[in-house]
Length: 132
Image (cartoon, rainbow, N blue to C red; front, top):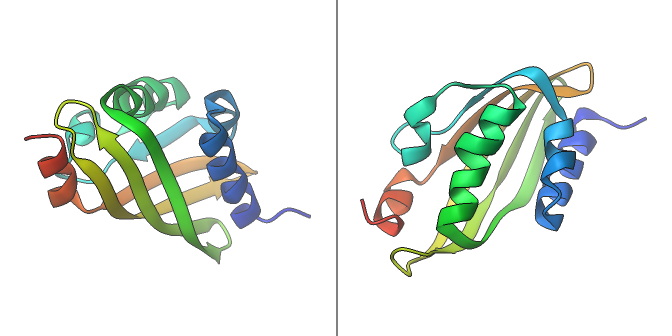
């Protein structure tokens, strides 16, 4: 039987393939998503619902960062809470700055679906890379 950590691993695999519909399919319709305070994408926190995340977070990042990737390094299985440590990679189109920022993602799951997300990242690096 798949664990919640397995489910989250499949989410990163789908995102790496560019399969955003598969990623969104793992989100509960009532998901509450929060980007880290201090990054431009936190301006609409909390994002509610898969489409809000797709448009307000994924769409904006993909439009601004070439070859964007969220590369997981470690999964910490806490049952209904899964923490992922990793790095964001890419190159910001407007500035040409290469992004290599660490992250921690905290997922809350219920019934095999992601109902909550909190991002922590190197906001200073994001700010510099985006030219803010």
